[in-house]
Amino acid sequence: MRPDDAATVADVLVWANLRGHDSHGVSRVPRYVEMMDAGDMDPTARPIYELDLPARFLLDGRRCMGPIAMMQAVATATERAKAAGLCFGLVRRTTHTGAIGRYAQWAAERGCVAVIAAAGVPLMAYHGTRVRSLSTSPLAVGMPSGRGPVVLDMATSVAALGRLVQARAGTEAIPDGWALAEDGTPTTDPKQAAIPLPLGGPKGSGLSLMFEFLTGILSGAPALAPALGPERRRRHTQNAFILALDVGGFRAPAQFAADADELIDIIKRLPLREGFGEILLPGERGRRTEAARRTAGIPIPPVTWEALARVAKALAIDLPATVPEPDRGT
Image 1 (cartoon, one colour):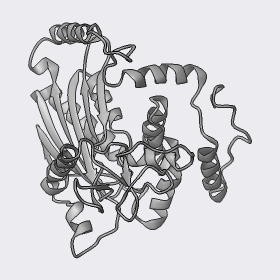
Image 2 (tube, helix red, strand yellow; image 1 turned 90 degrees about the vertical axis):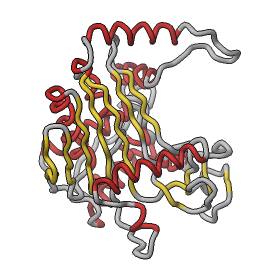
Image 3 (spheres, helix red, strand yellow; image 1 turned 180 degrees about the vertical axis):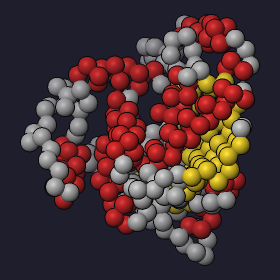
Image 4 (cartoon, one colour; image 1 turned 30 degrees about the horizontal axis):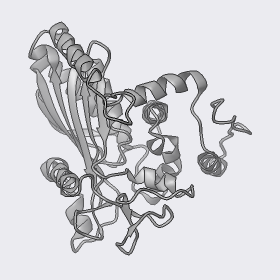
């Protein structure tokens, strides 16, 4: 990979670890290498614009690493929103995008509201089915405020597939309603959990389906139909959309920030239900985790470190001989 591309991917992975989204952090590296070996991901590919207009664009990733296409797309959408007030962009034929909250935060830090969603190959069961039939299609919304970005970053599944993979390393049962086993039956055994279930049943599966229409179908690169239909395509692919709106294009940014801060204060002071100690905003737990990990370091579970070590050995890359304990960081 080009050094700047490698740095972009590293930034997105480490951001996820800093925020506590470890399922989308450096634990992904071995899988990325597998995808390169299989030809699903091209480490040398550069995205190209298939449509390039002042307030809309279509960026073809050409199977590049997802963070490369997504960072280029959010930078383009933000720049053009500053000029035109808003910009809608599509990204097609890229690969795993990583934690899309990173891109929404990036836009919000620059004074733009960002709405971003991604979709791809079947991983999750459509509500009422027992087979993989939808992507776990994540949604991120970034909102500027006087106190920094407020970022919602969520999957349309009850639990992201990465969380299920991480749970397999443990022995604790997963909550009921998280996943199905390969045979389509509900399970709480993390070793058997294979197919995520949609968040809110028909609501989550409906959102995921709409994101496929808005990304794969609209961009001319369908992901679900080729995988579920007669073709039975197995190649990994992801598509995404980005909507960026410049706050300054609609009202004075200072006034927007003041109103946003007022709403935040009102929400934080709402009466608490029994069993709750605090009202948390979207992304607030992640910001606190990031602050702590920037001081103490990012804990890397042994199973993750061992997987990284195997990849490093195969590629003749030297890693530190030991990893400090999680409470000391690495």
